[in-house]
Length: 180
Image 1 (cartoon, rainbow, N blue to C red):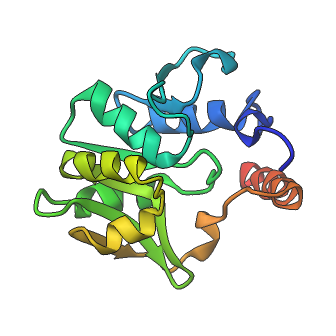
Image 2 (cartoon, rainbow, N blue to C red):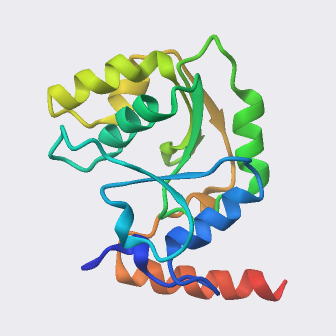
């Protein structure tokens, strides 16, 4: 992208992060942002900073910091760069989750979407081991865990914004949705 995509303006919000934060507040009573540093956000939010004991800033480091700080049995995670995943999809994942699983994640014809799902603290030790081994492959973790894959037909809602042309397309799509 060439710049921090989490800080790109999106819709009426100053950043994609703020857009996602406000959407999640409509669903959850507590919303946290996992980030390397809290000082980059210019809106009121709760940030869980990646542990300083790890030099990397990856989802794996984020999971370790989340479970270290929140002391919860499970969390729902959504990447900042997937702005079209809707409330129904999120609720389907949450309602499909069960304590017998380590994770419940979205899956489409194109593959799994590990940054859209519910993760249990049963994976906390495995996340720590992954960091220690510099292995950040969430797909590998999910294959070796008790994972509940929930299939969704609508591929478009799982679109990620990773490149400038995808960002431009997402802005156009958001404007279309706002007109509906």
